[in-house]
Image 1 (tube, rainbow, N blue to C red):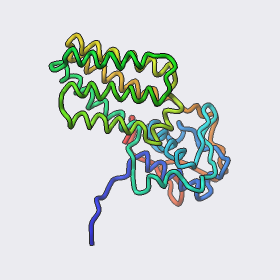
Image 2 (image 1 turned 60 degrees about the horizontal axis):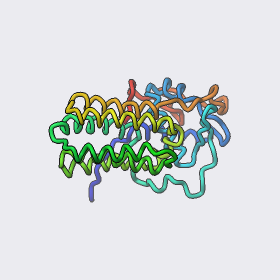
Image 3 (image 1 turned 180 degrees about the vertical axis):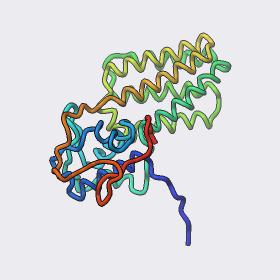
Image 4 (image 1 turned 60 degrees about the vertical axis):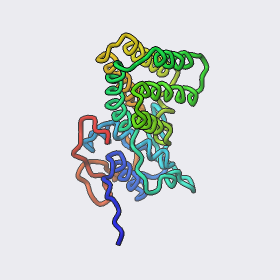
Amino acid sequence: MPLEAVETSRLYRQIADQLRHLIESGEFPVGSRLPSERELAEKLGVSRPSVREALIALEVEGRVRIRMGSGVYVVDPPAQAIARLWAGRQPDGPFEVLKARELIESAICSEAVALVEPADIAALDMVLEQMAVQGLGSDELVALDRSFHVALAGILRNGALIRCVGDLFDQRISPYFRQLARYFENSESWRRAVAEHRAIRDALARGDGPGAREAMRRHLQKSQERFSQSFGDAGKGNGPAGAKVGPNQKNGRMTGSKRKQGDIA
């Protein structure tokens, strides 16, 4: 019989699967509020970003609705769940992607200093000028953001690295990432991102390899921080009295994880 590769379930998917099971079993009926992001993270022994990725996945599936400053509420799933588009797939979580980009692109910046040419700086300047134009829509800014990072990778004249950076960035438009961005991207966050891009460009222009590497690392860490803000849960979950969410529980209850300290897998 043919064999298929065995893939370890990502942490955020494990959390989402357990929450989905509790919803489907009636532990959290339609209209009820889930335990707060902080509660879920503490009782599962995982990071809040992992919980946030799980909640975003459930919202994309149409299982919950996130109300900033209020909490996460269970809703009736649509007849054609968006999740079917991802049948058999486990897309990388947004924080997983950002961490990978931090490691790869900061290394690229360090190497690019020895190869950068005036034309490369001019190309980065052109993108930055366009990003500074007032009134651009989110899709336009994301496209320009991609152009900046791909152009920077292009300084190394390595097709594999260019594709790698482009492919990682393209996960930015996955349903999970786009849903997360809806809550935390605004004109101020984009203003800061452009300033961080300019710091990368300036370090490259003055031939400062360590500075360029640090500027890229800082930019992508700041991106993670911007997406790591709380949803602003109000109070505690208001599911039925018998519904419990905590570590090492069985028979439909949520089980804890050993991972802690910023796990984003």
